Length: 187
Image 1 (tube, one colour):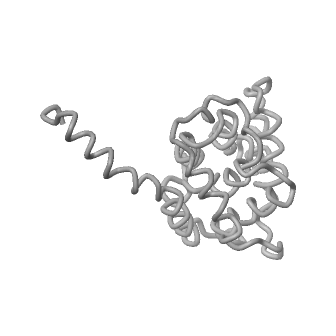
Image 2 (image 1 turned 45 degrees about the horizontal axis):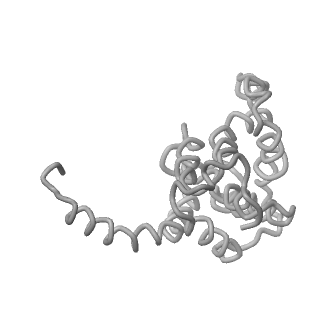
């Protein structure tokens, strides 16, 4: 890499732009891999993701939070033990600080609903109390994540979310939105 010059790197930047512009489409394609894996649940993680996003959309959440609900478990297929970190990393260049924090910490907050059944502390999330995104993350898990394992819920199809995903991933990576604490209005 140290043998390249400014012309070489300008060319690489030029060639990368169309690929980067298709990030949202690749993320949606990868999301479908959640149809397989993690057995034992009444629905697949793909259906869970669609259901969580359906609930967030119907609750009137902004587009950024709806996309976060859709993608919060995207890391499950590749890294089940640290899926929250992977999902948060995928979203980080495109979302506000607290949306990123919410996805990053949702695994701990979700534990409130089941950690007692596996010998863990249901109050583990309390170590984050006082963080400005605590209540939003608590609400996210209560209303969208933990409820979204219902095989009878009227879940929206993926195409209902494609425009929102396209809008979020069309943002300039690491643009001003990543410095905002909360999502900046409707997407």
